[in-house]
Image (cartoon, rainbow, N blue to C red; front, side):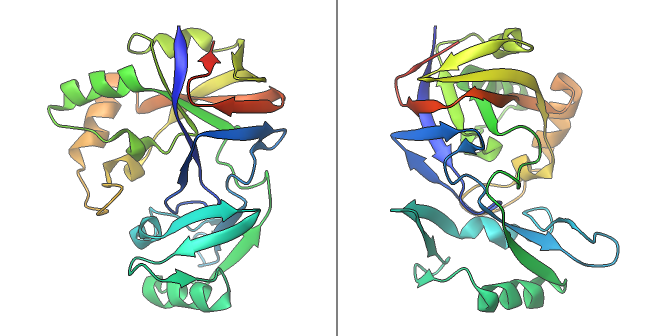
Length: 222
């Protein structure tokens, strides 16, 4: 039986998120998840995400929601605003024109909820021959109680997650983001190579919200 061990929300896409005891899953995913995102307007990427792959420093900012308002902490520990000044700072650092987009439910790479099986991460760490922090996979729900890759049996099914119902739609194809340490951003390219060779570059499953509801640590999933 799978249960939720950790719940994570990422109010600003590509920034460090917040670990929660519980969260409402709405029609648009976890309430407030990926509410804001940066868009790249450089000539060869116009309209695509401006994310960790273009500017790893994004991951050094911590974002959370307090009573619906964004609380953003810079790498030096100071609290800052998500505004034009920050956009211009990122534009200068990356040498790219970017914009900030607030679009609840519209800033996902795929479906609205990402689930990662911690046993699959542990098995992958053994294959890679090094510790692997599960936070590299930036999931909404980390679950335990399954065998490695047992979550793949959910594909095509509707599962229960707390009070919510989710349709498991696809496996999550990963990118170089998993090579970056979530605390230091230091890259370990070997991790992506192993994932490509052993798991077709995939870890975790995407889910579409069928019925909204609250999910929390310790809730049953499956």
